[in-house]
Length: 279
Image 1 (cartoon, rainbow, N blue to C red):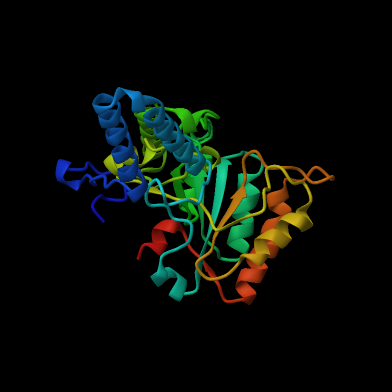
Image 2: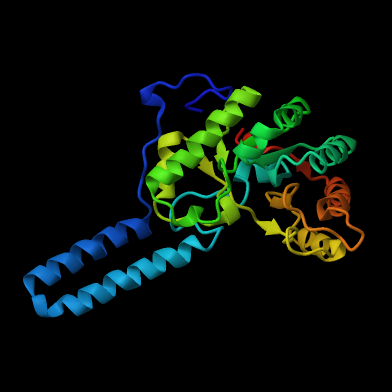
């Protein structure tokens, strides 16, 4: 890896270079051709404008698809080597939560399973000891932005950089470890994100299976959705923060996680952190 895992300084040579995806290259070409057409033949400007608008609509639509790779690299499944090792990744978002996260950690301990916690920087700053406890128990803390803003997907490069860098600084200061992965709030993004991630040497991670446990309070329904996609290479999405509650008032993750972990153990699937899956 180009950078150290524990917040060490990074040399300028260590920075990743951004490579535009095919869709982004096509978008550049559409804009250039539209401009050239409008200049060379002004009567064509309505068609040129329509082409640009259609291109922007396509980019916006792709940004609403969390698992898409059209805007750049995106981990929606573990790499082939990790899949061959029968590994899966449990990823837990929107924490830390002082009531839910400790119980999640105890469940993971019970099954000797490791997980990746995508933490919100602002929450981590409020509960730093809980973040440190996540790491102390062998799990990973990764970047889920500083404030989890609902309008993150329409931010420009400066706004995105501020959000990501603030979360990086917060999490490194608390845990002593530099996050290697980023998950966008709600998984939504725009074409500005990939160059920002490349400059910061962060990998975008989405998921392969989710149960919508922030909206669905029926634990059996959530469990069924998750178990259908539980196989080698899966990236499972759960939430310790903003978790929906069952009719009894229990956070859904606490009802669902034991079944997921038991099923993984029965299938000889090994829950690892995303950074461990890089090996």
